[in-house]
Image (cartoon, rainbow, N blue to C red; front, side, top):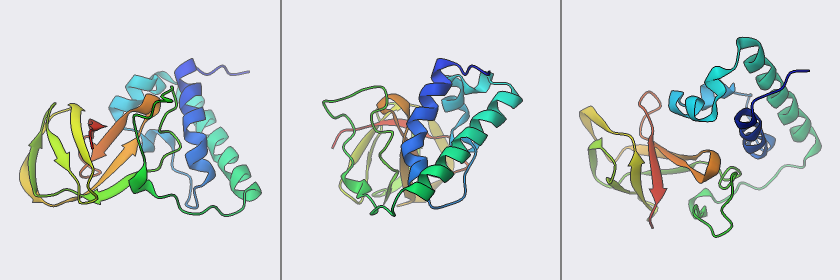
Length: 168
C-alpha cells in the first residue's frame, strides 16, 4: 500500500470539496498548483507513480461525488470571507475562486502592494514580486484559495501568482 506524505494527504482533503462540485473535466494536481504551491505542500517530492495515483484517486472521487450529489447552487464567491475566526488548516479550501477586475493600472507588485477590485474587496500582497513587461489596464483577475487559508492572486495564468491577504 502506498503511503502519501501528510502534506499530500492534507492537499487531497482540501481539494475534495472543490472537486465534488466540479462540472468540468478533471485537471491534474500539478496543473492546478503553482511550482511554489507544489513545493510548499511537498507534492514536488512525489514520484511520478505517486503523483499518477493521487490524480487517479482524486479523479475517481470527484466522479463518485458528482454522480451521487444533486446539482448544487452556484456559490456567491464574491462574499467569501477569508480570515474567519474558525481558522483551521483547511480554511478557505471549500471556497471557490473570486473573479473580478483590478481597479486602475498594474505594472508591478511586491509585498505590501494593495490591489483594489471592482467588487469592493482589497487584497495586500504578502509574498511574491513581479514587474510586468507592459502595464495592464484593469485586468481581469482571479483570487484562488490555497491550503491553510492562503490566497493567491492571479493576473495572468502564465505569470506567477502573488500570495495575498484580504484586508477589506
